[in-house]
Length: 223
Ligand code: C5J
Image (cartoon, rainbow, N blue to C red; front, top):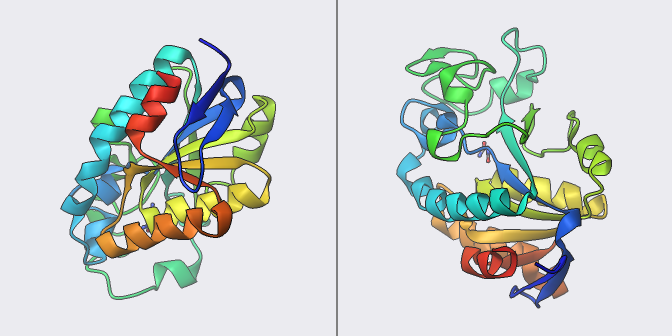
């Protein structure tokens, strides 16, 4: 296959050097996707996120076939909460707070069952897993070093949730000079209207933060 692929996207098609492109899968963790985790403790309907799994699985399979760098991220904290700001722990009125014991272990804590990635998208050997304390994948992580080490210039971004960790990561990446293509049906939000607006915010103004493409278009380009 040619090294360059053109993805049908909005606001316009984008041509990418696939050897300098990584697939970034944001926070597809049981804590956000399944009942009893962080997402549900905040009062959210976690079933809203399930629709993103199959599109991500399809793109992940294609990326693995082509040997593309695959990066998974996980939001969570050290067991002693030393990397969890009080302002985050105290936030809102959740049924369980970060660090409290829940049905999948302590809420949003590294090493607990709820913190791990859902089985359908589980990382395989050779894939990178970035543990992040914040919403963005660059803040207080090795993300920038990993991308630089692999010569990456472009990111195919998917995961949850569209307006929170996906948008924050895309904004961080955009400011660092990466071209981000967000996979629309590979993202989801607890709030469908925020999903729609989150994608519009990325592609507006000539693609102020990046591009938006359907998984079918990404598959056609990289598959
Ligand atoms: C949230 C995330 N929504 N992964 N985290 O708190 O988007």
